[in-house]
Length: 440
Image (tube, rainbow, N blue to C red):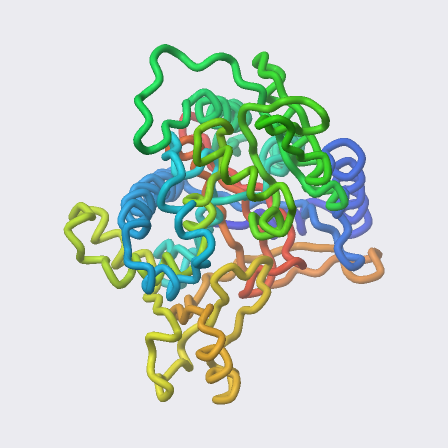
């Protein structure tokens, strides 16, 4: 894995480089819906590239498929765990029945993303699984293609990881929407499902999320799907039918945390509709639960279980950092070489470095009972080029890439990479992930 930062540093003057970065971010905001392209005065879209060798690309795609299979098997087992074990994994008691009884989807998640880091020994290590509402759709399609055309001027051998990534997203969403829900105890439906109206549900005040579901709507409409986009306040029940923006819908894809939906009055009706098979939830409770870092701890604990193939066991042992539920560890556990993470912590929030965590902080995490301890990864740094604070010069810095590897409908889809500090947070920048065209 190599960075293009050095080549860009030698190719462009600081003034020219800063102008390109500004142009890329303005275009991303105005045309691609990335309204938060300026994060606390710093650009979100970087001008650069992370290049995987064909061998690295092949290995990452294979690991993504294997881990998807691991998670599918794990979730089938976990939903049969005793109630007390579900509580320890962080699943709320009032949603236990719904988790166990919701109709199975075609995929664990139609759109998912495994976040990997390459360690200093050259081994891909899985940091988390964004199974519920992964971001990066416009970045890896619209923004990446535009940057790739720029970067080809540096090196004509550069190629996109998956030029058909938009088609892969659309197909995964469509296949899931057409897969009829079959509630437990109800005879299987016969014949193909009629063309369902798909509702894309969002919290409209989050403009970037609204832009992402609007992008999904656009690509679905290209293939003739009937789609409606609406805010959670436009989500209603009328005469046993779920409506979004005044239109009856047959399937829902939600682009916000399910806990935000659970506090809405319509949530009970939503659950009843999905459990009875009247409404298809494209990203259901099982897929949401898979995102919890507690599931990583369960997988690590069962890494030698017969539910996994020998290949899967080997992949878990080598590529998943050892992970434990904090409440399963003793008060005197040596956590100094671990990272302590909240089950559903997002954007680097509620993440603590064990090397600097106080005994009082460790005890607090144990009492909260919603944290895992994961062995710290020594991430391999790369060079990264970015404008300085006044946008007059550039800084060639050491940064750490988080390579998000997409799984669309059970198949590898490409990569969404953010680069920044050792813990990927809201300050991390998007950087295109490319490969080398070995045929040239």
